[in-house]
Amino acid sequence: MLFEGVLKKMPTELKEKVQYYLVFENDFLHLNQILDQKISLSFLKFQCLNCGKDKKIFRQGFCYDCFYEIPQAGDWIMKPELSTAHLDKEDRDLEYEKRVQLQPHIVYLANSSNVKVGVTRKTQVPTRWIDQGAHEALGILEVPNRYLAGIAEVALKDHVADKTNWRTMLKNEIEDVNLEETRNKLVEFLPEEVEPYILKNNKETEINFPVLSYPTKLKSLNLQKKLDYSGVLKGVKGQYLIFEDNTVFNIRSNEGLYVRLEIN
Image (tube, rainbow, N blue to C red):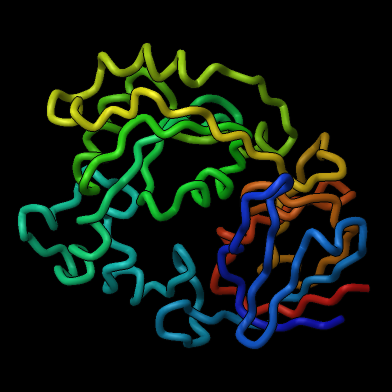
């Protein structure tokens, strides 16, 4: 079977095991069905996710020009506390920013390599947790806009991590943590303006990933340097493909690469 197209973040479904899909323009591949099979990947060209041109990808699947122009790559994406739509203040495109920022957001705790705090739109739960490779997660706040979520996250960063150790996550070197107890310890550090939005009775969500075996030593595949790669797919976790030879490939960080994928 042969597939060809631009890489984009994998859509997922939360079931007994997370279901993963690689979606191309005219076709899609259900990755859970090809575990333990050999696949080959080849880099063909770039294709910016915004302009569609064959221009070197800069960040987040966008070429340099698009990254610094389009609202989908504004600083408030990575730093929610910089959101200004609630003040009717434009960054790059106020209509877009109001649509995205002025909707319910969840501040959460997730455990993938360690307990971390994060922010996501309510509509992206549990997708965001799956993308981070979290085996357990818990929403601790539901606020009406992105700014409030951002200032809550900033306040908690002094007391809990805000990043995932991707190596630990992929090796599955994890410990179960009682996230409800962690939440109860952290709420005292929240800003006063978000206290009415605390989710006091939320329960943990448990997530199981389709992985047959975890790597012991990690080799990250750079498809722009190694233009062709073949390996046996042993699992998918977060947005990573995991291969039998300990190679891992991050689909998310390779968005905008146009590839050929063959199941051998």
